Image (cartoon, rainbow, N blue to C red):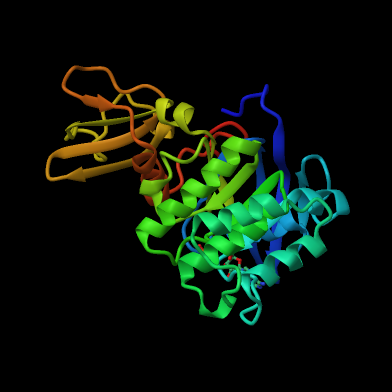
Amino acid sequence: MTDPTVPTALRATGLGRRFRSRWALRDCAFTVPAGKITALVGPNGAGKSTLFHLATGLLHPTTGELSVFGATPGSDEARARTAFLAQDKPLYPRFTVGDTLRFGRELNDDWDQAAAERIVRAGDIPFDTRIGTLSQGQATRVALAVAFGKRPELLLLDEPLADLDPLVRIEAMGLVMEEVAERGTTVVISSHILSELESVCDHVLLLKHGGVRLDGDVQRLCEDHVRFTGLADASTGDGLPAGLDRGTVVEATVTGRQLTAFVRGTAPTGDHWITETPSLEELLLAYLRSDDRPTEDTGRDGAAA
Ligand SMILES: Nc1ncnc2c1ncn2[C@@H]1O[C@H](COP(=O)(O)OP(=O)(O)OP(=O)(O)O)[C@@H](O)[C@H]1O
């Protein structure tokens, strides 16, 4: 559920983007809360990078609208408030780290040199090192220093940590969280590493087949779902209990005679079912594996079409 008291950083209504005859995103409606960390999740080709490119103004919508703090992506106002970091970090290999920060300062009026230097120093990276000689983790740190030096209100991270080893990735994520805590920056980060998201993210947006499948506060979404296991009902064909509304079922699997199901709403009655609130990782995996049920919601405040 999107909390109406929290200001909105990104708002999409009827958002669609088509490449030739193929829709990368279609009829998306969602909000991203300001001052929170939102995980953007979805299988390959779901439309995550397309969404980032729309949010930065690198692409324009085919249908609908997307706003960044109420402004049009790519406008001077939106650009001044947004930093974008993709996996291929935009650093010049021949520049030194010091040159890179100087370049950032020249390009950005509100540049925060002290913050950028602090991030570099915390990684023990000498300022006279050439970018081309840095390790992947060090380059990511410098790229994050440049991104935070811009003092963005919205930081868009399109898998910039994907190529890092787990320890460096966790360290870089800690860096992001520190900066967020200190400045209240809104972060949208795409990731395929679901296990690492629960401790980091407040909000989740799951895209699949170009549409919003899940959108909401992490804790609330987990509490809104139930995972239940028990003996499959042999009389119903799908193993689910007869009285259960099939429209609430996200995913159901029968292994041998054992049924495991995720539903949005309440668990079926009967004390032979073991019920649990799913973790975020379990919930996301259920939606990623599901055949896209339920379909009744609009995608603003929870499960979507
Ligand atoms: N410039 C483009 N021209 C044509 N098709 C594109 C273009 N960019 C993206 N697409 C298509 O749009 C769809 C969504 O791609 P996108 O890169 O947004 O997915 P993604 O969720 O970021 O995937 P991944 O997890 O693999 O990075 C894909 O089918 C892709 O082939």
